[in-house]
Image (cartoon, rainbow, N blue to C red; front, side):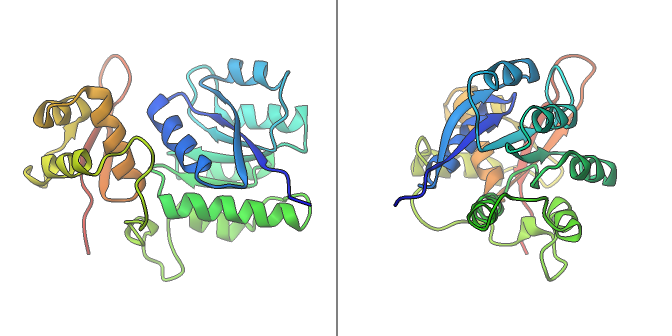
Length: 240
């Protein structure tokens, strides 16, 4: 008998990032998207009508801390598993997530190979019984993006082979990469600037930039201004 697909709820307030996660998950035959939410409030409302197997949960939400939402989800139904996605690499976040019962963690910017590895670890744990929180030392290694050699994981397996995800065109991708080649090491560009350089919209440029970030080819810096949302600025990732 065929094993039922693993239902995933994506909780992410950045629509571009959520779209990338969705495309990656949909490429895995054993996983199905059962819902998406951008806020803690929307997540709680969804959980009243659906029961996902797995919640992919961003820690930074506009109306709540993801750790608090993690505790709420596990209290609501301890059979629902959670993988946290966080830009925070501090020990306190690790400890709180462990106490909250998170299965695992992924650190932004997401690396495609690491994303798939985590999903495969989760699937393997499900086949052996109900998943439990993974080993603390291994979790911390993943959170700090270090591989077994001690090198940052962001420098390991940067480019993945095979076809590009849906919505990513090879020609446009090359243009986006070229736009970042011609800037100095001290410079960076936002999505609007890249879009103007290659003749595309801000949203299109950002989608491609975030894909390049996800495979480790581009580095993103979050710049906090005085007002409004933090600005994401992009540059080529250092090559070794």
